[in-house]
Image (cartoon, rainbow, N blue to C red):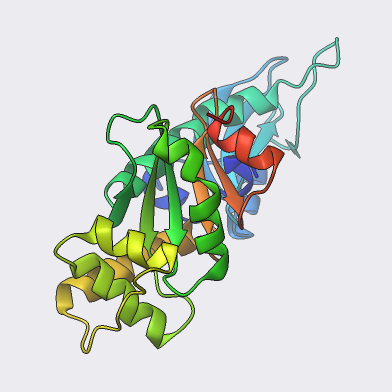
Amino acid sequence: MTFNKILPALALLTLPIMAQAEKYPAPVEAMRERGVEVLERFDAPSGLTGYTALFNGRPLALYVTEDGKHALIGSLLNAKGEDLTGAVLEEKVSRPQSKVMWEKLKDSSWIADGSDKAETIVYVFTDPNCPYCKRFWKDARPWIDAGKVQLRHVMVGTLGESSQKKAAYLLSAKDPKAALLGNESGKKPAQEAKTIAAKQRQQLDDNQQLMGLLGATGTPAILYLDPTGMMQMHPGAPQGEQLLELFGPRP
């Protein structure tokens, strides 16, 4: 699943929305009244004026005619049939937002699994009681044990109170990495914290909010950078060729 397909409402908080005082052409103003968020004006061919925008979290382009009386929504093609819109939306909306969200993942509360020198970093929203998270943990071992990949488990408690208490226990453990290893391997399942301290409650709330902003609805939800540097999300535990796409050749 490509990042621009999961672009959430958070984009409104981080991308440059045009100044509210600016006067828009009538068709653009009409779209704003219908809930379209106008982000940035850009040059377009044939006398058109382009605007990047978001509607229901999805990027789109508006093209206004030279007289300012009409607007087109969609992809603009040149004489060769080449799409001129996709590159603009990627440059001005999807790619900047990808970088923003990757930084937010870095700043979230996660537990590292694998070498700090690993070439590939993968974030995964993990619930301590999620069987598919444990399956993904197991399937990733060849790459992690070889030092190729580091998984960063962003702990959440989506499966209820027990999950939240176990996630809090893991985050507050003296050795979170060892505690996570015990839980995911099944050798030493995480205990339920008797009470969730304020720090861990905030960490879990922040992680859950971030998960929602990314559009993830279940665990594991896996975030990684593709070869072009764009963030991608894989919902659920990958299998077979999907693991190779995510991690590279099997060690």
